[in-house]
Length: 233
Image (cartoon, rainbow, N blue to C red; front, side, top):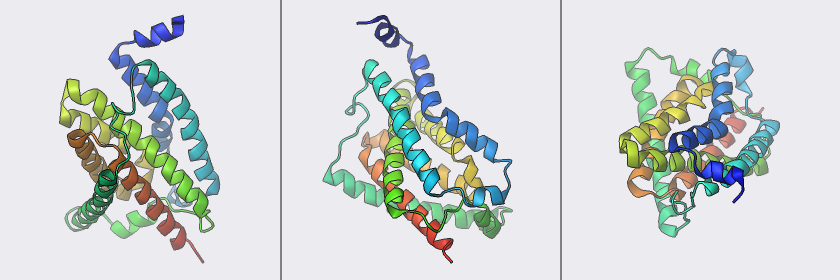
């Protein structure tokens, strides 16, 4: 064993957690926070083909280090609960339906009970270019769905739940998920918090990651496709 591997294996769990979170989500969180001050026009065409390519490349490159690092630390796919099954696929489709129903209910309630101009908030929500390549939409949605759920749900909850408890792990996972989605504005917040809580609780109770990944991939594909069609001439 070389000195670097020995050092990595001897790192305290807290340092491991900090390294994984900062490497996986540090830049997206920083960029998302900066975007809060951007104008709605600046954010309106946030997703285009170049942006999708950038997401794919960045997350694949980041994954290379994270996979290597976590393998050195003794993490495995089984420990993260990642196995593809027919039952898990059915759970994923059900999770998609339930999550969409909750999001619609939360947004409807917010419009009725809170001083939120929902039409204006929707207009400020990041859009997508009309000429998005569907091949890129499917590729980026797949890569992003796997990347996010493996680290923001699978890793965080598997690392924290045994020592901090189920709800602390779910809340930390949801909080980090929200931080790197702040660029989506009020509508995004009303969507991301329910997603984080539902996905996080489901994983914490079942330790099945594939349903989350499938639901996330489908949500990204649907969202990008609808946003692109909404910008069509």
